[in-house]
Amino acid sequence: RKSRIKRSTTKTSRAASRKLKAAIQKNRRLLTRLGNANEQILKLQKMNCVIKAEVLEQNIASLPPRQQEAVRQWFSVCKVKPNGLRYSKSWVLDCIMMKMKSPRLYEHLRRNKILSLPSKATLKRYMSSYRTVFGFSEKVLQKLKTKATNLDSCKRHGGLLIDELKLSEHLSVKNSGIVEGFVDLGPFTTTKDKQIPSDHGMVILFVPFQGKWSQIIGCFATNGNMKGDTLAKVVTEATIPAEKSGLFVDFITTDGAAWNRKMWKIMGVQATAKSTTCKVQHPVDSDRHLFFVSDFPHLIKCLRNSLLKCGFNTPAGHVTMQHVKEAFKIDSCNVTLKAMPGITRCHLEPNGFEKMRVTYAFQLFGTRVLQALHLYQEKLCKIFGTITATQHFFSKIHHLIALMTSRHPGEALRPHSFYATELKEFLLYLNQWEKHANGKGGFISDSRATGLRVTISSTLELLAYLTEKVGYKYLMTSRISQDKLENLFGIVRQASGSNDHPTPSQFLVIANCLSFYGLVKAISHGNCEVDTLASLLEISSGDDMQPDNPDPLSLDATSSAAQTSLPAQASVSDHKQHVVSSDSRLIFHIAGYVARRC
Image 1 (cartoon, rainbow, N blue to C red):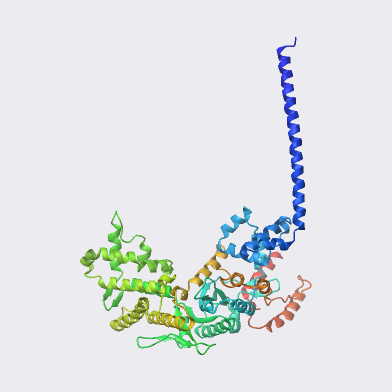
Image 2: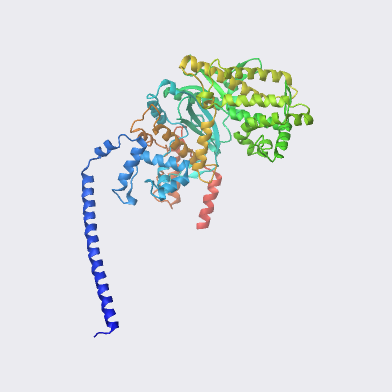
Protein backbone atom coordinates (compact mmCIF):
# COMPACT_ATOMS: atom_id res chain seq x y z
CA ARG A 1 0.00 0.00 0.00
CA LYS A 2 1.09 3.54 -0.83
CA SER A 3 1.83 5.85 2.01
CA ARG A 4 -0.52 8.65 2.84
CA ILE A 5 2.00 11.24 1.63
CA LYS A 6 2.31 9.62 -1.79
CA ARG A 7 -1.46 9.37 -2.13
CA SER A 8 -1.91 13.10 -1.29
CA THR A 9 0.83 14.07 -3.76
CA THR A 10 -0.84 12.08 -6.51
CA LYS A 11 -4.19 13.74 -5.81
CA THR A 12 -2.60 17.18 -5.84
CA SER A 13 -0.84 16.57 -9.14
CA ARG A 14 -4.03 15.24 -10.72
CA ALA A 15 -5.96 18.29 -9.53
CA ALA A 16 -3.26 20.59 -10.88
CA SER A 17 -3.23 18.81 -14.22
CA ARG A 18 -7.02 19.09 -14.47
CA LYS A 19 -6.83 22.84 -13.69
CA LEU A 20 -4.08 23.28 -16.24
CA LYS A 21 -6.08 21.42 -18.86
CA ALA A 22 -9.17 23.54 -18.08
CA ALA A 23 -7.10 26.73 -18.30
CA ILE A 24 -5.66 25.64 -21.66
CA GLN A 25 -9.13 24.92 -22.99
CA LYS A 26 -10.42 28.26 -21.70
CA ASN A 27 -7.48 30.04 -23.30
CA ARG A 28 -8.24 28.32 -26.61
CA ARG A 29 -11.87 29.42 -26.40
CA LEU A 30 -10.83 33.00 -25.61
CA LEU A 31 -8.37 32.99 -28.49
CA THR A 32 -11.12 31.72 -30.75
CA ARG A 33 -13.46 34.49 -29.56
CA LEU A 34 -10.71 37.07 -29.98
CA GLY A 35 -10.07 35.85 -33.48
CA ASN A 36 -13.76 36.06 -34.28
CA ALA A 37 -13.89 39.58 -32.82
CA ASN A 38 -10.90 40.64 -34.90
CA GLU A 39 -12.53 39.21 -38.00
CA GLN A 40 -15.71 41.09 -37.15
CA ILE A 41 -13.74 44.32 -36.68
CA LEU A 42 -12.05 43.83 -40.05
CA LYS A 43 -15.42 43.23 -41.67
CA LEU A 44 -16.85 46.39 -40.06
CA GLN A 45 -13.82 48.39 -41.14
CA LYS A 46 -14.25 47.15 -44.70
CA MET A 47 -17.94 48.03 -44.53
CA ASN A 48 -17.10 51.52 -43.22
CA CYS A 49 -14.65 52.02 -46.04
CA VAL A 50 -17.32 51.05 -48.54
CA ILE A 51 -19.81 53.50 -47.06
CA LYS A 52 -19.56 56.83 -48.85
CA ALA A 53 -19.16 60.17 -47.14
CA GLU A 54 -22.56 61.21 -48.41
CA VAL A 55 -24.20 58.63 -46.15
CA LEU A 56 -22.54 60.15 -43.09
CA GLU A 57 -23.59 63.62 -44.17
CA GLN A 58 -27.17 62.45 -44.56
CA ASN A 59 -27.20 60.89 -41.09
CA ILE A 60 -25.85 63.99 -39.37
CA ALA A 61 -27.79 66.52 -41.44
CA SER A 62 -30.32 67.05 -38.65
CA LEU A 63 -27.62 68.00 -36.12
CA PRO A 64 -26.58 71.62 -35.49
CA PRO A 65 -23.60 72.79 -37.58
CA ARG A 66 -21.15 72.71 -34.67
CA GLN A 67 -22.15 69.15 -33.72
CA GLN A 68 -21.77 68.07 -37.35
CA GLU A 69 -18.22 69.39 -37.33
CA ALA A 70 -17.46 67.52 -34.10
CA VAL A 71 -18.74 64.24 -35.60
CA ARG A 72 -16.57 64.72 -38.68
CA GLN A 73 -13.53 65.30 -36.50
CA TRP A 74 -14.20 62.12 -34.53
CA PHE A 75 -14.43 60.05 -37.71
CA SER A 76 -11.21 61.60 -38.99
CA VAL A 77 -9.46 60.57 -35.76
CA CYS A 78 -10.28 56.91 -36.44
CA LYS A 79 -8.52 56.94 -39.80
CA VAL A 80 -5.05 58.27 -38.91
CA LYS A 81 -2.47 58.15 -36.15
CA PRO A 82 -2.58 60.82 -33.40
CA ASN A 83 0.44 62.63 -34.88
CA GLY A 84 -1.13 62.73 -38.32
CA LEU A 85 -4.40 64.46 -37.48
CA ARG A 86 -5.56 67.26 -39.73
CA TYR A 87 -8.17 69.72 -38.47
CA SER A 88 -10.60 71.78 -40.49
CA LYS A 89 -10.31 75.56 -40.31
CA SER A 90 -13.71 76.04 -38.71
CA TRP A 91 -12.94 73.42 -36.04
CA VAL A 92 -9.60 75.04 -35.24
CA LEU A 93 -11.28 78.43 -34.89
CA ASP A 94 -13.85 76.91 -32.51
CA CYS A 95 -11.02 75.35 -30.50
CA ILE A 96 -9.23 78.70 -30.30
CA MET A 97 -12.38 80.35 -28.98
CA MET A 98 -12.90 77.56 -26.42
CA LYS A 99 -9.36 77.96 -25.15
CA MET A 100 -9.75 81.74 -24.95
CA LYS A 101 -12.92 81.51 -22.88
CA SER A 102 -11.81 78.68 -20.55
CA PRO A 103 -8.23 77.34 -20.81
CA ARG A 104 -8.71 74.88 -17.93
CA LEU A 105 -11.86 73.37 -19.39
CA TYR A 106 -10.13 73.09 -22.77
CA GLU A 107 -7.22 71.16 -21.24
CA HIS A 108 -9.66 68.91 -19.36
CA LEU A 109 -11.51 68.02 -22.56
CA ARG A 110 -8.26 67.43 -24.46
CA ARG A 111 -6.40 65.36 -21.85
CA ASN A 112 -9.38 63.12 -21.13
CA LYS A 113 -10.03 62.78 -24.88
CA ILE A 114 -13.64 63.87 -24.54
CA LEU A 115 -13.25 65.81 -27.78
CA SER A 116 -10.68 65.71 -30.54
CA LEU A 117 -8.83 68.92 -29.72
CA PRO A 118 -5.46 70.16 -31.02
CA SER A 119 -2.60 70.94 -28.65
CA LYS A 120 -1.48 74.41 -27.57
CA ALA A 121 1.41 74.36 -30.04
CA THR A 122 -0.96 73.55 -32.90
CA LEU A 123 -3.32 76.35 -31.91
CA LYS A 124 -0.43 78.78 -31.67
CA ARG A 125 0.72 77.81 -35.15
CA TYR A 126 -2.75 78.37 -36.58
CA MET A 127 -3.19 81.66 -34.72
CA SER A 128 0.02 83.02 -36.19
CA SER A 129 -1.64 82.86 -39.61
CA TYR A 130 -4.80 84.71 -38.47
CA ARG A 131 -3.28 88.11 -39.00
CA THR A 132 -4.49 90.93 -41.16
CA VAL A 133 -3.78 94.60 -40.55
CA PHE A 134 -4.82 97.28 -38.11
CA GLY A 135 -7.65 99.45 -39.34
CA PHE A 136 -10.59 98.14 -41.37
CA SER A 137 -10.32 94.81 -43.18
CA GLU A 138 -11.96 94.88 -46.60
CA LYS A 139 -12.49 91.12 -46.77
CA VAL A 140 -14.12 91.04 -43.35
CA LEU A 141 -16.48 93.82 -44.42
CA GLN A 142 -17.29 92.01 -47.66
CA LYS A 143 -18.17 88.80 -45.82
CA LEU A 144 -20.15 90.83 -43.32
CA LYS A 145 -22.17 92.22 -46.22
CA THR A 146 -22.88 88.69 -47.44
CA LYS A 147 -24.01 87.63 -44.01
CA ALA A 148 -26.13 90.75 -43.44
CA THR A 149 -28.20 90.00 -46.52
CA ASN A 150 -29.60 86.93 -44.73
CA LEU A 151 -30.82 88.96 -41.77
CA ASP A 152 -34.07 90.82 -41.34
CA SER A 153 -33.73 94.60 -41.53
CA CYS A 154 -34.81 94.99 -37.89
CA LYS A 155 -31.94 92.76 -36.80
CA ARG A 156 -29.40 94.89 -38.66
CA HIS A 157 -30.05 98.08 -36.69
CA GLY A 158 -27.57 98.82 -33.94
CA GLY A 159 -24.60 100.98 -33.06
CA LEU A 160 -20.82 101.15 -32.70
CA LEU A 161 -19.09 100.77 -29.34
CA ILE A 162 -15.63 102.36 -29.10
CA ASP A 163 -13.15 101.85 -26.28
CA GLU A 164 -9.46 101.23 -25.63
CA LEU A 165 -7.54 98.39 -23.99
CA LYS A 166 -4.18 98.67 -22.23
CA LEU A 167 -1.37 96.85 -24.05
CA SER A 168 2.25 96.11 -23.19
CA GLU A 169 4.88 98.02 -25.13
CA HIS A 170 6.68 95.37 -27.14
CA LEU A 171 8.76 95.62 -30.31
CA SER A 172 9.36 92.33 -32.07
CA VAL A 173 11.39 91.47 -35.15
CA LYS A 174 10.02 88.90 -37.57
CA ASN A 175 12.07 86.55 -39.71
CA SER A 176 11.51 88.90 -42.62
CA GLY A 177 13.31 91.68 -40.74
CA ILE A 178 10.16 93.72 -40.13
CA VAL A 179 9.76 95.46 -36.77
CA GLU A 180 6.23 95.43 -35.39
CA GLY A 181 4.72 97.03 -32.31
CA PHE A 182 4.49 100.69 -33.36
CA VAL A 183 1.42 102.92 -33.48
CA ASP A 184 -0.84 102.03 -36.40
CA LEU A 185 -4.01 104.04 -37.05
CA GLY A 186 -4.52 102.70 -40.54
CA PRO A 187 -4.94 105.52 -43.07
CA PHE A 188 -4.77 108.10 -40.24
CA THR A 189 -1.21 107.18 -39.20
CA THR A 190 1.19 110.13 -39.34
CA THR A 191 4.92 109.96 -39.91
CA LYS A 192 5.52 110.87 -36.27
CA ASP A 193 3.24 108.09 -35.03
CA LYS A 194 5.17 105.44 -36.95
CA GLN A 195 8.15 105.91 -34.61
CA ILE A 196 6.18 105.57 -31.34
CA PRO A 197 5.64 102.18 -29.63
CA SER A 198 2.00 101.25 -29.11
CA ASP A 199 0.63 100.76 -25.59
CA HIS A 200 -3.15 100.77 -26.22
CA GLY A 201 -5.48 98.98 -28.58
CA MET A 202 -8.76 100.53 -29.71
CA VAL A 203 -11.66 98.36 -30.89
CA ILE A 204 -14.79 99.38 -32.81
CA LEU A 205 -17.56 96.84 -32.22
CA PHE A 206 -20.99 96.74 -33.85
CA VAL A 207 -23.80 95.61 -31.52
CA PRO A 208 -27.40 95.18 -32.76
CA PHE A 209 -30.55 96.10 -30.85
CA GLN A 210 -31.81 92.53 -31.39
CA GLY A 211 -29.80 89.33 -31.16
CA LYS A 212 -26.79 88.12 -29.20
CA TRP A 213 -24.24 88.49 -31.98
CA SER A 214 -21.67 91.25 -32.40
CA GLN A 215 -19.00 92.02 -34.96
CA ILE A 216 -15.63 93.77 -34.79
CA ILE A 217 -15.49 96.46 -37.47
CA GLY A 218 -11.91 97.60 -36.90
CA CYS A 219 -9.05 97.80 -34.41
CA PHE A 220 -6.15 100.23 -34.04
CA ALA A 221 -2.82 100.37 -32.20
CA THR A 222 -2.45 103.67 -30.34
CA ASN A 223 -0.14 105.27 -27.83
CA GLY A 224 -2.07 106.59 -24.84
CA ASN A 225 -5.28 107.73 -26.46
CA MET A 226 -6.42 108.74 -29.90
CA LYS A 227 -6.75 112.50 -30.33
CA GLY A 228 -10.24 113.94 -30.57
CA ASP A 229 -9.92 115.21 -34.13
CA THR A 230 -8.53 111.88 -35.34
CA LEU A 231 -11.23 110.02 -33.44
CA ALA A 232 -13.93 112.07 -35.18
CA LYS A 233 -12.53 110.97 -38.54
CA VAL A 234 -12.36 107.34 -37.40
CA VAL A 235 -16.00 107.43 -36.25
CA THR A 236 -17.12 108.66 -39.66
CA GLU A 237 -14.81 106.23 -41.44
CA ALA A 238 -16.19 103.30 -39.38
CA THR A 239 -19.82 104.26 -39.98
CA ILE A 240 -19.55 104.38 -43.76
CA PRO A 241 -18.14 100.83 -44.39
CA ALA A 242 -20.49 99.37 -41.77
CA GLU A 243 -23.44 100.90 -43.62
CA LYS A 244 -22.09 99.66 -46.96
CA SER A 245 -21.91 96.17 -45.46
CA GLY A 246 -25.67 96.19 -44.95
CA LEU A 247 -25.79 97.27 -41.30
CA PHE A 248 -27.64 100.29 -39.94
CA VAL A 249 -25.49 102.33 -37.54
CA ASP A 250 -27.84 104.39 -35.39
CA PHE A 251 -25.66 105.37 -32.42
CA ILE A 252 -22.05 105.74 -31.25
CA THR A 253 -21.16 104.84 -27.65
CA THR A 254 -17.96 105.98 -25.93
CA ASP A 255 -16.91 106.53 -22.34
CA GLY A 256 -16.51 109.88 -20.60
CA ALA A 257 -12.83 110.46 -21.36
CA ALA A 258 -11.69 113.95 -22.36
CA TRP A 259 -10.74 112.96 -25.93
CA ASN A 260 -14.21 111.46 -26.46
CA ARG A 261 -15.82 114.70 -25.29
CA LYS A 262 -13.58 116.58 -27.71
CA MET A 263 -14.78 114.28 -30.48
CA TRP A 264 -18.35 115.15 -29.48
CA LYS A 265 -17.53 118.85 -29.70
CA ILE A 266 -15.99 118.44 -33.16
CA MET A 267 -19.04 116.50 -34.34
CA GLY A 268 -21.36 119.21 -32.96
CA VAL A 269 -22.72 117.33 -29.94
CA GLN A 270 -23.23 119.45 -26.82
CA ALA A 271 -25.63 119.81 -23.91
CA THR A 272 -26.52 122.59 -21.48
CA ALA A 273 -29.51 123.40 -19.32
CA LYS A 274 -30.97 125.46 -22.18
CA SER A 275 -30.37 123.21 -25.19
CA THR A 276 -29.12 119.72 -26.00
CA THR A 277 -27.75 118.43 -29.30
CA CYS A 278 -27.45 114.66 -29.10
CA LYS A 279 -27.43 113.74 -32.80
CA VAL A 280 -25.95 114.74 -36.14
CA GLN A 281 -26.96 114.08 -39.71
CA HIS A 282 -26.08 110.56 -40.75
CA PRO A 283 -23.00 110.48 -43.04
CA VAL A 284 -24.60 107.86 -45.32
CA ASP A 285 -28.36 108.55 -45.25
CA SER A 286 -29.52 112.17 -45.11
CA ASP A 287 -32.96 111.07 -43.87
CA ARG A 288 -31.51 109.53 -40.72
CA HIS A 289 -29.53 110.76 -37.73
CA LEU A 290 -26.50 109.42 -35.88
CA PHE A 291 -27.00 109.54 -32.10
CA PHE A 292 -24.21 109.81 -29.55
CA VAL A 293 -24.24 108.03 -26.18
CA SER A 294 -21.90 108.07 -23.20
CA ASP A 295 -21.47 104.72 -21.45
CA PHE A 296 -24.02 104.83 -18.64
CA PRO A 297 -22.20 102.58 -16.10
CA HIS A 298 -19.15 104.83 -16.48
CA LEU A 299 -21.30 107.88 -15.74
CA ILE A 300 -22.65 106.26 -12.56
CA LYS A 301 -19.12 105.43 -11.40
CA CYS A 302 -18.10 109.06 -11.89
CA LEU A 303 -21.23 110.23 -10.07
CA ARG A 304 -20.43 107.93 -7.15
CA ASN A 305 -16.82 109.18 -7.01
CA SER A 306 -17.98 112.80 -6.82
CA LEU A 307 -20.39 111.89 -4.02
CA LEU A 308 -17.56 110.24 -2.07
CA LYS A 309 -15.43 113.38 -2.30
CA CYS A 310 -17.68 116.21 -1.15
CA GLY A 311 -21.36 115.38 -1.48
CA PHE A 312 -23.99 117.29 -3.47
CA ASN A 313 -26.09 120.41 -2.95
CA THR A 314 -29.45 119.36 -4.41
CA PRO A 315 -32.77 121.27 -4.36
CA ALA A 316 -33.97 118.94 -1.58
CA GLY A 317 -30.92 119.62 0.59
CA HIS A 318 -27.39 118.38 1.19
CA VAL A 319 -26.59 114.81 0.06
CA THR A 320 -23.64 113.15 1.80
CA MET A 321 -22.17 109.70 2.22
CA GLN A 322 -22.00 110.20 6.00
CA HIS A 323 -25.66 109.20 6.24
CA VAL A 324 -24.98 105.89 4.50
CA LYS A 325 -21.84 105.22 6.53
CA GLU A 326 -23.67 105.81 9.79
CA ALA A 327 -26.50 103.52 8.68
CA PHE A 328 -23.90 100.87 7.83
CA LYS A 329 -22.34 101.28 11.28
CA ILE A 330 -25.72 100.83 12.99
CA ASP A 331 -26.57 97.85 10.81
CA SER A 332 -23.22 96.19 11.56
CA CYS A 333 -24.07 96.14 15.27
CA ASN A 334 -27.15 94.00 14.66
CA VAL A 335 -26.63 90.31 15.41
CA THR A 336 -29.98 89.30 13.91
CA LEU A 337 -31.29 90.19 10.46
CA LYS A 338 -29.48 93.04 8.68
CA ALA A 339 -31.09 95.74 6.58
CA MET A 340 -28.18 96.07 4.12
CA PRO A 341 -26.57 92.64 3.65
CA GLY A 342 -23.85 92.55 1.04
CA ILE A 343 -22.83 96.19 1.57
CA THR A 344 -19.20 96.37 2.71
CA ARG A 345 -16.39 98.87 3.10
CA CYS A 346 -15.66 98.36 -0.59
CA HIS A 347 -18.91 100.18 -1.36
CA LEU A 348 -18.45 103.02 1.12
CA GLU A 349 -14.67 103.55 0.98
CA PRO A 350 -13.43 101.95 -2.26
CA ASN A 351 -9.78 102.03 -3.25
CA GLY A 352 -8.51 102.78 -6.73
CA PHE A 353 -9.26 99.33 -8.11
CA GLU A 354 -12.63 99.02 -6.39
CA LYS A 355 -13.75 102.34 -7.86
CA MET A 356 -13.50 100.77 -11.31
CA ARG A 357 -16.09 98.08 -10.53
CA VAL A 358 -19.54 98.93 -11.79
CA THR A 359 -21.21 96.48 -9.40
CA TYR A 360 -20.15 98.43 -6.32
CA ALA A 361 -21.49 101.68 -7.76
CA PHE A 362 -24.84 100.13 -8.70
CA GLN A 363 -25.22 98.40 -5.32
CA LEU A 364 -24.49 101.64 -3.47
CA PHE A 365 -27.65 103.12 -5.01
CA GLY A 366 -29.55 99.84 -4.65
CA THR A 367 -32.57 98.81 -2.61
CA ARG A 368 -30.53 97.60 0.38
CA VAL A 369 -29.10 101.03 1.10
CA LEU A 370 -32.53 102.62 0.65
CA GLN A 371 -34.02 100.08 3.07
CA ALA A 372 -31.37 100.85 5.67
CA LEU A 373 -31.91 104.61 5.36
CA HIS A 374 -35.65 104.09 5.83
CA LEU A 375 -35.27 101.61 8.73
CA TYR A 376 -32.77 103.70 10.69
CA GLN A 377 -34.28 107.07 9.75
CA GLU A 378 -35.13 108.04 13.35
CA LYS A 379 -31.65 107.26 14.65
CA LEU A 380 -30.01 109.06 11.74
CA CYS A 381 -32.23 112.12 12.15
CA LYS A 382 -31.14 112.40 15.78
CA ILE A 383 -27.52 112.54 14.63
CA PHE A 384 -27.70 114.55 11.38
CA GLY A 385 -31.03 116.35 11.65
CA THR A 386 -32.65 115.21 8.39
CA ILE A 387 -31.70 112.70 5.71
CA THR A 388 -34.60 113.34 3.33
CA ALA A 389 -32.33 114.80 0.63
CA THR A 390 -30.07 111.73 0.67
CA GLN A 391 -33.04 109.38 0.49
CA HIS A 392 -34.59 111.34 -2.38
CA PHE A 393 -31.33 111.48 -4.35
CA PHE A 394 -30.49 107.79 -3.88
CA SER A 395 -34.02 106.84 -4.92
CA LYS A 396 -33.77 108.91 -8.13
CA ILE A 397 -30.42 107.37 -9.09
CA HIS A 398 -31.74 103.88 -8.29
CA HIS A 399 -34.68 104.34 -10.66
CA LEU A 400 -32.41 105.86 -13.31
CA ILE A 401 -30.11 102.80 -13.18
CA ALA A 402 -33.10 100.48 -13.59
CA LEU A 403 -34.32 102.46 -16.61
CA MET A 404 -30.94 102.65 -18.36
CA THR A 405 -29.88 99.01 -17.84
CA SER A 406 -32.97 97.04 -18.88
CA ARG A 407 -32.10 93.59 -20.23
CA HIS A 408 -35.43 91.88 -20.91
CA PRO A 409 -38.74 92.98 -22.47
CA GLY A 410 -40.54 93.26 -19.13
CA GLU A 411 -38.27 96.14 -18.06
CA ALA A 412 -37.68 97.60 -21.52
CA LEU A 413 -38.35 101.22 -22.41
CA ARG A 414 -41.60 101.75 -24.32
CA PRO A 415 -43.00 104.91 -25.94
CA HIS A 416 -45.39 107.02 -23.85
CA SER A 417 -44.75 104.80 -20.82
CA PHE A 418 -44.12 105.70 -17.20
CA TYR A 419 -40.43 104.85 -17.67
CA ALA A 420 -40.07 107.34 -20.53
CA THR A 421 -41.75 110.00 -18.41
CA GLU A 422 -39.28 109.34 -15.59
CA LEU A 423 -36.34 109.91 -17.93
CA LYS A 424 -37.78 113.26 -19.03
CA GLU A 425 -38.34 114.20 -15.39
CA PHE A 426 -34.72 113.39 -14.57
CA LEU A 427 -33.57 115.83 -17.26
CA LEU A 428 -35.69 118.51 -15.60
CA TYR A 429 -34.23 117.51 -12.23
CA LEU A 430 -30.70 118.02 -13.60
CA ASN A 431 -31.61 121.54 -14.72
CA GLN A 432 -33.14 122.37 -11.32
CA TRP A 433 -30.13 120.93 -9.53
CA GLU A 434 -27.67 122.96 -11.63
CA LYS A 435 -29.70 126.13 -11.11
CA HIS A 436 -29.86 125.50 -7.36
CA ALA A 437 -26.08 124.94 -7.10
CA ASN A 438 -25.53 128.19 -9.04
CA GLY A 439 -21.88 127.40 -9.76
CA LYS A 440 -20.92 127.37 -6.06
CA GLY A 441 -20.20 123.65 -5.86
CA GLY A 442 -22.34 120.69 -5.02
CA PHE A 443 -23.06 119.84 -8.65
CA ILE A 444 -21.45 117.27 -10.91
CA SER A 445 -18.79 118.33 -13.40
CA ASP A 446 -19.73 119.79 -16.77
CA SER A 447 -18.45 116.70 -18.59
CA ARG A 448 -20.64 114.36 -16.53
CA ALA A 449 -23.67 116.62 -16.79
CA THR A 450 -23.20 116.76 -20.56
CA GLY A 451 -22.84 112.99 -20.68
CA LEU A 452 -26.06 112.42 -18.73
CA ARG A 453 -28.06 114.93 -20.77
CA VAL A 454 -26.84 113.64 -24.13
CA THR A 455 -27.25 109.97 -23.16
CA ILE A 456 -30.79 110.33 -21.82
CA SER A 457 -31.85 112.54 -24.73
CA SER A 458 -30.38 110.09 -27.25
CA THR A 459 -32.15 107.21 -25.52
CA LEU A 460 -35.52 108.93 -25.77
CA GLU A 461 -35.03 109.94 -29.41
CA LEU A 462 -33.72 106.49 -30.32
CA LEU A 463 -36.86 105.02 -28.76
CA ALA A 464 -39.04 107.28 -30.88
CA TYR A 465 -37.08 106.53 -34.06
CA LEU A 466 -37.08 102.74 -33.57
CA THR A 467 -40.75 102.48 -32.66
CA GLU A 468 -42.09 104.91 -35.27
CA LYS A 469 -39.90 104.19 -38.31
CA VAL A 470 -38.23 100.81 -37.83
CA GLY A 471 -41.10 98.88 -36.27
CA TYR A 472 -39.76 98.13 -32.79
CA LYS A 473 -42.11 97.83 -29.83
CA TYR A 474 -39.55 98.63 -27.14
CA LEU A 475 -35.88 99.39 -26.51
CA MET A 476 -33.66 97.44 -24.09
CA THR A 477 -31.39 100.22 -22.90
CA SER A 478 -28.51 97.92 -21.90
CA ARG A 479 -27.81 97.47 -25.63
CA ILE A 480 -26.47 101.03 -25.92
CA SER A 481 -23.87 100.59 -23.15
CA GLN A 482 -20.38 99.14 -23.52
CA ASP A 483 -21.11 95.81 -21.81
CA LYS A 484 -20.46 93.77 -24.96
CA LEU A 485 -17.16 95.52 -25.53
CA GLU A 486 -16.05 94.96 -21.93
CA ASN A 487 -16.85 91.26 -22.31
CA LEU A 488 -14.72 91.17 -25.44
CA PHE A 489 -11.83 92.83 -23.59
CA GLY A 490 -12.16 90.17 -20.90
CA ILE A 491 -11.71 87.45 -23.52
CA VAL A 492 -8.66 89.26 -24.94
CA ARG A 493 -7.04 89.48 -21.50
CA GLN A 494 -7.86 85.88 -20.63
CA ALA A 495 -6.47 84.62 -23.93
CA SER A 496 -3.10 86.15 -23.04
CA GLY A 497 -2.67 83.86 -20.02
CA SER A 498 -1.36 85.33 -16.79
CA ASN A 499 -0.50 88.62 -18.53
CA ASP A 500 -3.48 90.98 -18.41
CA HIS A 501 -1.83 93.32 -20.93
CA PRO A 502 -1.17 91.56 -24.26
CA THR A 503 1.34 92.85 -26.76
CA PRO A 504 0.15 94.62 -29.93
CA SER A 505 0.82 91.49 -32.00
CA GLN A 506 -1.14 89.29 -29.59
CA PHE A 507 -3.96 91.83 -29.52
CA LEU A 508 -4.20 91.87 -33.32
CA VAL A 509 -4.24 88.06 -33.59
CA ILE A 510 -6.91 87.67 -30.89
CA ALA A 511 -9.05 90.47 -32.34
CA ASN A 512 -8.87 88.82 -35.76
CA CYS A 513 -9.89 85.45 -34.31
CA LEU A 514 -12.88 87.07 -32.63
CA SER A 515 -13.75 88.91 -35.83
CA PHE A 516 -13.58 85.70 -37.90
CA TYR A 517 -15.57 83.79 -35.31
CA GLY A 518 -18.29 86.42 -35.33
CA LEU A 519 -18.70 86.00 -39.08
CA VAL A 520 -18.55 82.19 -39.19
CA LYS A 521 -20.74 81.64 -36.13
CA ALA A 522 -24.35 80.96 -37.05
CA ILE A 523 -26.77 83.81 -36.34
CA SER A 524 -30.37 83.22 -35.42
CA HIS A 525 -32.57 83.39 -38.55
CA GLY A 526 -29.45 83.63 -40.71
CA ASN A 527 -26.83 81.41 -42.30
CA CYS A 528 -23.29 81.57 -43.59
CA GLU A 529 -21.66 80.32 -46.76
CA VAL A 530 -19.40 77.28 -46.48
CA ASP A 531 -16.37 79.05 -47.92
CA THR A 532 -16.62 82.10 -45.66
CA LEU A 533 -13.91 81.01 -43.22
CA ALA A 534 -11.60 79.77 -45.96
CA SER A 535 -11.89 83.14 -47.69
CA LEU A 536 -11.22 85.04 -44.48
CA LEU A 537 -8.10 83.06 -43.65
CA GLU A 538 -6.61 83.86 -47.04
CA ILE A 539 -6.18 87.49 -46.00
CA SER A 540 -2.65 88.64 -46.71
CA SER A 541 -0.75 90.11 -43.82
CA GLY A 542 1.03 92.63 -46.03
CA ASP A 543 4.49 91.50 -44.91
CA ASP A 544 5.24 88.63 -47.27
CA MET A 545 8.36 90.28 -48.57
CA GLN A 546 11.42 88.35 -47.39
CA PRO A 547 14.87 90.01 -47.42
CA ASP A 548 17.15 88.46 -50.00
CA ASN A 549 20.11 87.41 -47.80
CA PRO A 550 22.03 84.41 -49.17
CA ASP A 551 24.58 84.39 -46.35
CA PRO A 552 23.14 85.40 -42.96
CA LEU A 553 26.63 85.62 -41.45
CA SER A 554 27.87 88.03 -44.09
CA LEU A 555 27.73 91.70 -43.08
CA ASP A 556 27.91 92.82 -46.70
CA ALA A 557 25.03 90.58 -47.65
CA THR A 558 22.96 91.84 -44.72
CA SER A 559 23.70 95.46 -45.59
CA SER A 560 22.83 94.99 -49.26
CA ALA A 561 19.64 93.14 -48.34
CA ALA A 562 18.61 95.99 -46.07
CA GLN A 563 19.28 98.56 -48.77
CA THR A 564 17.15 96.63 -51.27
CA SER A 565 14.28 95.69 -48.96
CA LEU A 566 13.70 98.90 -47.01
CA PRO A 567 12.91 101.16 -49.99
CA ALA A 568 10.52 98.55 -51.33
CA GLN A 569 8.76 98.36 -47.99
CA ALA A 570 8.45 102.12 -47.83
CA SER A 571 6.19 102.08 -50.87
CA VAL A 572 3.63 99.87 -49.15
CA SER A 573 0.32 101.53 -48.29
CA ASP A 574 0.03 103.26 -44.92
CA HIS A 575 -2.94 101.02 -44.16
CA LYS A 576 -0.51 98.39 -42.91
CA GLN A 577 0.08 96.60 -39.66
CA HIS A 578 3.87 96.56 -39.60
CA VAL A 579 6.03 99.66 -39.74
CA VAL A 580 9.60 99.25 -40.93
CA SER A 581 11.71 101.29 -38.55
CA SER A 582 14.92 101.28 -36.56
CA ASP A 583 15.06 101.59 -32.80
CA SER A 584 18.09 102.28 -30.60
CA ARG A 585 17.00 99.72 -28.01
CA LEU A 586 16.87 97.06 -30.70
CA ILE A 587 20.35 97.98 -31.95
CA PHE A 588 21.78 97.89 -28.40
CA HIS A 589 20.17 94.49 -27.79
CA ILE A 590 21.58 92.98 -30.99
CA ALA A 591 25.01 94.53 -30.40
CA GLY A 592 25.16 93.10 -26.88
CA TYR A 593 24.15 89.67 -28.14
CA VAL A 594 26.84 89.72 -30.84
CA ALA A 595 29.46 90.90 -28.32
CA ARG A 596 28.67 88.05 -25.92
CA ARG A 597 28.69 85.44 -28.69
CA CYS A 598 32.00 86.64 -30.10
